[in-house]
Image 1: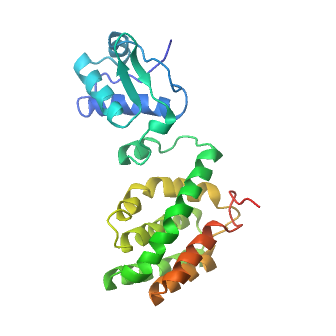
Image 2: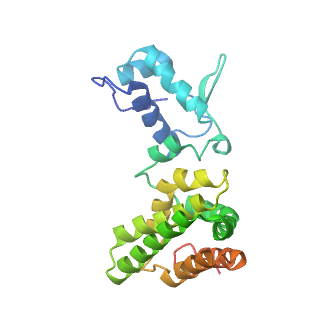
Image 3: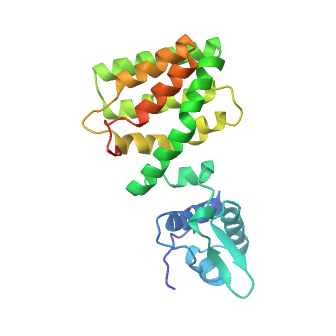
Length: 236
């Protein structure tokens, strides 16, 4: 198999990370398909212009993220997609700027439907005074951006709004999603919004339910937002 990799020659810091990122992006994009066997360590070392030590560290990093596996007499192989750790922060960072298929966005939306309404309901009950103040600040900024619409600013503030919901949930298992998913939230919002469809009224209902401490209304408002028609992923 002939596979061209970006040379790492001349780099003095983060060499193994640079190599891992290049290989990972080829896997994530499908250029290296599941089941594909990577070139030998000698071949990869020559293509990257690095030592076998640096290369092995990179492969070890990718193995820890569920992308690769090494087998005797077979070599290093790309694992099936179901085994990739898609919530790994570094892996999400490496995905930035890549073309994503609509299927990925649909899967992310389904994932959000399963967890975000619950996180929103918890935020209505558990949000601290400081977190409610911060959510109010973010919501006011959303309103300002809506009045003076700028797509980039909207994506940024929309991401902060949903991140804050997970943080305010007070649940140690939900909180990490607010941080880990920041990158993919931005891609999702950039893709799913259309013709300035900001869903400001829907966000208002979520905000008001949280501020009122209304658990049921918060859950319903969150789910309603994701089932709405103001984005490209709406399905009848």
